[in-house]
Image (cartoon, rainbow, N blue to C red; front, side):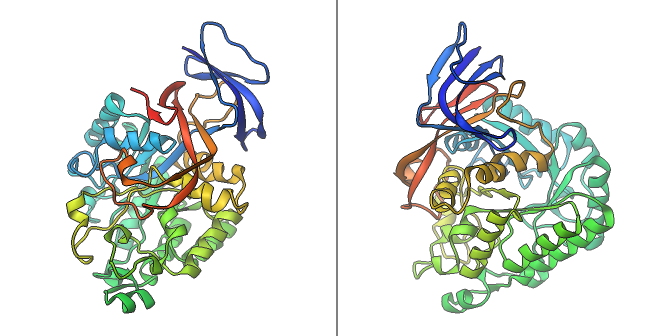
Length: 430
């Protein structure tokens, strides 16, 4: 198959591109980038006014399959990902059964190959059954394609156990992605401890419940040399811990979510909207501002969604009973463009690093760049389109978004995975 993308504004900080150019693609690879290109026996697509970037990657997604297909499955989750502009996702292991062995990794890969609309990288569990007691079959999972390890959803509570996990991660050169939550301190916390918990009459979730494990895992990174990635970081002090670790030269990275950047504890009003119940909880406005500063100054390495779909009936209940989590695949790009890029707080190049370049580097998967020889995983964006977040437009099975009704600017229109369109003019390519 041959494809020529004409007149696009091409941006890729990896190769110093920020100009209008054509991109010629053949057999899934980029063969030429330049002006006035032509291609024989192929399809041409005029992208005048659009921006083309290396395909976006969301390195923190819950696809829910196997075991929780009523919430989401690989087919619906990857359709939502493509709709949001993503060419790849990394799925978390808190499925049922848990993704803690090679058979589970192979199942997800096979399903993604059969029904997926984007690439699916698999993160294996650190411990068997996510119980934090016995090591999972890490080596076997690496041999069968696992790209990272995490007990996301609760995190490894025992420091000795986490040390063993990181020893093995170092051995296999795989990043350990840490869900930092001291369960003994967090307890049954529902919202950020302080003004929010007092105002809402809810059990508090102290910031220290996150920060203590960030500090612990950075110390274990120093001890073992294992690459460490802090998941869904939410506090200013936690960010300072990561910043100090980076200055020390430790292999520590971190991620933030759009809901922790653009929503805060005051977003939860008297209606007790359960869509805003997330783990970790929404923090203070000061924390949000600190995280945005970290995004701008380079301390934060990736913006992820922590896409956590739930059924309507699960969320339509008392706040204390509802599960934690919100979806984000179909709004993440637009939220970053609307709140950071369009106002001039963040350059396009930096946004691409956060949502495309760095996630691939952290996961140690194939580099994608807009240059000859690279795999043609590309995201096409209309930076001017204005739209309102509407649950009826979601391709995810779930609608538990905290941004419904938000007016946003910018959206993916086309997605190419290996040169083949999975999103065309805003619609999933069948």
